[in-house]
Length: 435
Image (cartoon, rainbow, N blue to C red; front, side, top):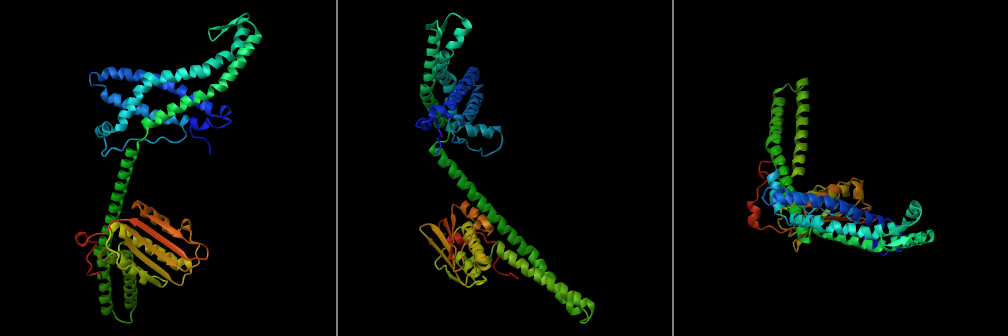
C-alpha cells in the first residue's frame, strides 16, 4: 500500500529518492507564506476587534484560513480533510453567522489561524533553513569559490580557499541533504497531523452530522410517502370517478342507439376502451399505494401480491405487526419487484415469501427455485429499491448462485406500532367505494 503521510513514507527504503521529501518541502514552504500572510491579516483584524467591529471578520478570517489549510493539507496528507461545518438551517448571512459562531470547529479554526500566524510559520521556515538551506549553502561552495576566484565562506563560518575544500563541503552538503530529509519529513508530518486534529471534524461532530443526515433522510421518506398517498387519492377521487361516470354514460348511450347501426358499433368500441382504461387506472392506483397495505399492513399486502403472481407463491407472514408507513411501503414494493423478477427471469416453478419482525428489525425473504444468476446491475429494478431501503437505514441482499436457488433479503430496523398509533394514522383513501 502506498504511503499516505510523510510518517508512513519514512519507513520505506527508497524514501529519500521518492516524492515525499519534496512534498515535505512544499508543505513547509507554503506554510511559511500562508502563515506570514495570515499573521498580517489577523493583526489588522485583531486591532479592529478591540472595538467589537472586527470580531465577525476575525471569525471569518479563521474560517477562511481553515479552508485554505484543509486544501493545502493534501500536499502532506493524501487523505481528504472533511469540512467540519454544518449547513445552516436557514438561508442568509445572519443564519450563517449564528451557525458558525455556535460551532466548536469555528473557534478551533480561529485558534489554529492565530497559532499559524504567530508561531507555526516561523518554525516552518526554520525547519526549511536547516533542512534545505544548510545543505544548499554547502553544495554551492564550489560555485561561489569560482565566482570569487580566491576564497569564500561556507555558512558564514568556515573559510574555503581551495577547490578540494570546496568539493569536500559540497560532498558534505549532498550527504546532509539526504540525511536531513528524514527530520524534515517528520516535522512536516507533525504539522500535518496538528492541522488535521484542529481543522477536521471530531468524532462527536461526525456523530451529530450522521444524526442530521439520518433525520433528513427520514423527512425525505415521509415526504415521498405523503406525495404518493396524495397522488393515489387524487387519482381515485378524481380521474377514476370520472371514468366510472363516462363508462356508465357510454353504456346508457348504447341502449338508446339502434342495435345494428354504425353508431352502436362506435359506442360499443368506446365503451370497451373506457372500461380498459378504467381497469388500467385501478391497477396503477393499486401499484402506487395498495389499499390493503394501508388498511391491514404488510402481511396481508404481501399475501395479496402473492395471489397475483405469475408463479405459485407460498407466504409466511403471520404475526407481522403494523410498522411505520415508509417501512411497510418499501418492504412491500421490494417484495412485489422480487416476485415480478421471479415471474419474468427466473424460470422458477415455485416461490416463497417470509416476513418476520424481531428484535426491532423487519426481515423479508423472497426465495425461488429458479435458475439463479440474478444480477441487480442488469436492470432488474432492484437497484432503486436498494437505495430506497438504504434511506431507511436498511439493507437489501441478493444471493443467487448460478443454478439457483435465489434469495432476496430485506432487513430494515424499525419499531412495531401500537394499535392506537395505527388507528390514528391518516389513510390514503376510504376503503369503501373503490369502484
